Length: 195
Image (cartoon, rainbow, N blue to C red; front, side, top):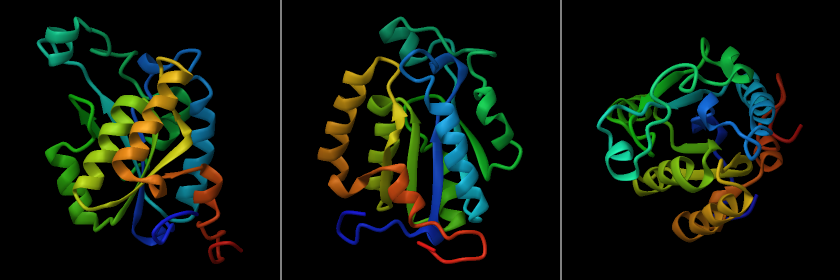
């Protein structure tokens, strides 16, 4: 890992899976669910919490009023994708959110109560909900990591890359890591990190 300490404090970390919902899956994001399912499986096997977020677009939302965007109002668009559905019953939490960020009042309370110091983000979309959540976490004083290979933009790879450029500027180079970087920090069941 790179960075100031460059290390994710896995003992104080939560994996936040952002908006991997049917309505955001297309040719640019369809590769993510299996990769995130495998990552989350390893994360949970190490005894670490997984939080899922779910975006719900309400009638009269800013997205409708200013962007004329009315998708993701109801199932099946709002449902977590089937590849991640097995995570839902055992997730530490599923956070419903009305905007880009995962930091609703309920999420703030959850993170504070759990005492998480590090938040690791993956999901959809790199340039909007992942980015906004990561920046908000950074501004709240958390150590933030965005998994560059476990997020994507439904607008395509160029927009994903642009999101990572902005994330680099706003949360720093140490905030951008890959899934192998993260998994190297996880203990094997019954072992220690790097075993």
